[in-house]
Every structure is written in C-alpha cells, then in structure tokens.
Image 1 (tube, rainbow, N blue to C red):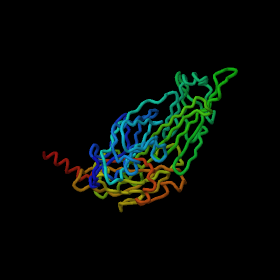
Image 2 (cartoon, one colour):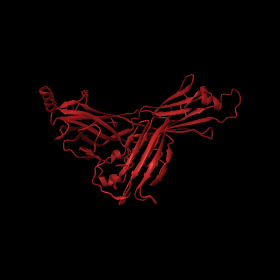
Image 3 (cartoon, rainbow, N blue to C red):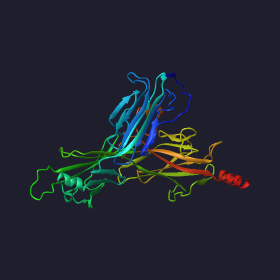
Image 4 (cartoon, rainbow, N blue to C red):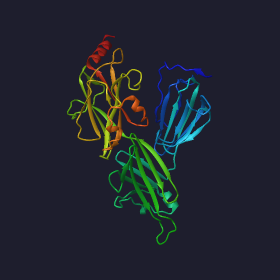
Length: 411
C-alpha cells in the first residue's frame, strides 16, 4: 500500500558487500521506504568470479520509474553499462561480466511503497585465462591446456618487452608484469589511469600453421579506489573478455611525533586529552606518478557506525576541526596530518577515525586531488567520485582507561 512518507526517521543504506553471497533491500523493508533515499551498494566478490543478483520482490511507483527506481550497473557507478532500471515486478536476475556489480536505489516521490529485496551469489568464471591487478604488478595466468587446445605453444609467449619472461609450470604460463617496466604502457584521462601490455603467442607447429598469431591484451584501469582488469584476445581469435575489480591498499597509521619515524603499535592507543595525534596515510603502489589526497576524516565512538554519532575532522577537503594541520611529505603517495585528541561526551571512551582518501594521476589538475575544499552543492555534481576508505584506532584517554580499571577493581 502506498503511504505519505516521513523523512524524520534515521536510516543508513548502501555500502560495500564483499561476502560470496548475501542479501540487500531498501530501507525499512518490508515497511515503506523513505522518500529521500539515494543508496548505492557495490557488490564485490573474489577476483575471477561473477556476481549473480536475483530480485525476489520489487514494489514502487510503477509507470515510467521517474521518481523511485532501482538501477543495476555492470561495474562501478557512472563508468559502467546500465544492465537494468525498474520500479516494479519481481524475479529479475542480472549477472555481471566481472566480479563487481553496483545497485542504486533512488526515491524522491510523495508516496512510497514496500520497496525491494534481492539476493546475490558468486559463480566462478572461466579459468583458461585469469588476471589480477595487484598494487605493484599485473598477474596474468594462461592455462597450458587452453593454449594447446587452440594450437599455441606455451614456450612461444612474450610481452611487449620480450626480455621479460614468464614462469611456466606443468599447467600454467604465469606473467608478473610491472606497471613501470616490461613494455607496459601508461595513459589516462580525468577519471582513469590505464596500464596495458600485450601477450603475444604463435603456433605450436614446427613448419607451417593456419592459426593467426595470438594477441592477448592485458589492461588494468584505476578508478580512484577501483581496478578494472581486462584480458581479451584480438583479431577474432577465440575472443576472451575478462574484467576484474580490486581495491587499492592504503594504510592509515598513528605516529608518536611530527618526525613520523616511530609508528604507534599499541591498541588501544592511550593518549591525553588535547594531545597532538599524528597520522600518515600510505598508498602501496609501484607507480610513483600517483597522488594521495585526504578528502574526509570522521571520528566515531564505534568502529562500525560512522553516521549516528560522529565528529568531522575534515569533510570534502574542507577542514572542520581547528586543530587539524598538514605536514610536508617527501612522496606524493604519502600524506601526513594531525589533530588534537578529544573524547565523546556520554559515549564509549574509545574513538575511531574513518578517512576517505582519493588516488589521482600526478599533475592531473582537473582531478579531485587538486580541487581542495568542495562545498556540498558542488560535490553533488561529481557524485561518481570514488575514494579509498580506511579506519584507524581505537584511541582512548589515559584518564578514562584508569577510571574503567578502578571501576572493575571496585566490583
């Protein structure tokens, strides 16, 4: 039944779903959803697996789906093909071409309905060729059985740079391809960084062949926090298209001083009120032409909820805390900053920090890393911007920790 919706209830929705299988649904399902929702779920399973998403119930406004609807994308939002947009019906099923599928639920109508419910699961992709985009190199594996079945020799595969040799086992030919060597080509535009190479192969015949030469294109595309990985065979030779997605590896670490020489290894990290807290964010990548930018840092008394009780240190590149300051870093992929310790009133004495960081190409002055502070209205215009999210902590005041110990001893 449709109802007039109220927006006064607090709710959260969307996020990253990384389990092999699971469920998702509109806020408050099976009760009516709010009329101001804009939820985005990224379903990311293991590399070289596909995502299958099945909707068991969909009830919204119907008609042309102008105000309330669900969208399913074959990859990241904004940069991937739209698989479907709908607002009614059920038993719709979608399968990704890679290991990442995005679901967006949007509502903006006067009347709201029950919403939707869906389940997803992962299925293995064809293992004849696989590709992983790791922080330092591309890891491409080709099945020797596959090569033999198509008439190609495992011993006649090479990269753009023929001096970079693969490892050959009884079952596989394995290439570990650096992003900065072995003939890897680097290019990009405002939104992506692209690394590509080419595996060439020839027939296993000794004298003649009627097979075309094998061209296996290897491509890793970086979309801020997301790698798009593609492997395909050109020239109509047994076309293979494989796309995989992964995440950048970023560490967020507390340090004892502004020299950033001694990391804090204690957990919790016991501190004094108003003490300087020094943090360093480090991007693990072999490409030195990448820039790391702190977009948002939010504090919370709990490690899994950064929406209910929070305190902003910096948001959308705009400093919110007067004690926040940045420090010089000798590397583009390392950022250093500090703020002064505080505690939440009437809450858990622990404090956790969640930061969103953006990765960009160096000297790409149109990218997010060079835009600085962006107001909310301007931010909405670039909603497709992705970021790496990392959590640090907990930190705890020495005084609060002592009070807790005394309370336990008294009992």
